[in-house]
Length: 286
Ligand code: PAF
Image 1 (cartoon, rainbow, N blue to C red):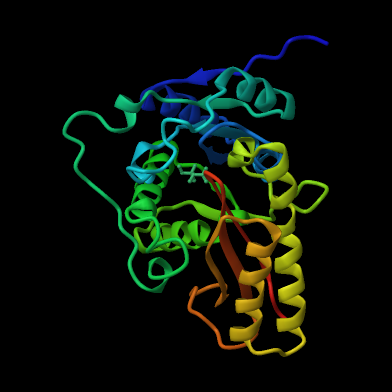
Image 2: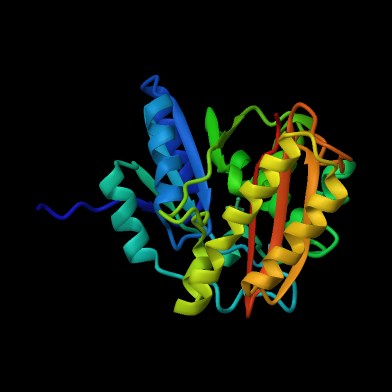
């Protein structure tokens, strides 16, 4: 098979020149922001972008500002050459992979912070500064490339809502698109962090979506949230999870906690397996 290579922009200027050239030809542009270590979930976002836009740009930038001081920034998997090959195979047109100094030049001092209910619960209190880091980098990527549409996975549901709010509130002229979570055969949501799991941990990880599905079924049948959430937490610990950050039933749009299922309700969980933190969410409506 012929080797496919992907044009790569390292500077905002080069990215803008390419997008401007496409626009001059009347072509629409889709953006898929990532931190690399690409899996089939990311590639599904590129395929969606290609199905709706004439050109697809993927970005790879491991954003230091969205990692806490005790989080895995240094260990985060980096595999740009393999990622570029995967992106070329699915038909992406451009990779934007800037060095840190291009995104945060000396003197950079502006942060985008989304307030309100979206950043009060779930991961927000456990990862201080995380969503500011995400909103800031995504705002920059959207303004740097000015695509027609940008895609984000629903696995990071809270992130997706924060990004939608940021784009709406700041009048960023880009349609924010969510895409369904892509799962392994045992149901585990695909994530670059799954690479941290040892074989025994990987088997336990597959219990997370199963426990969520079971709880969501009971909630959808009308059970009150409190006992179902407490039992799901116990089931995760019994399955071998080291600790559970939360199991929560929330409105999918406001992310406010619900006492029982309601239209738009979602079930969210975050749990640790050794040094790996996994998150997942599913619909929990009747
Ligand atoms: O979901 C991710 O990979 C990142 O949070 C994102 C959206 C690329 C911002 O760095």
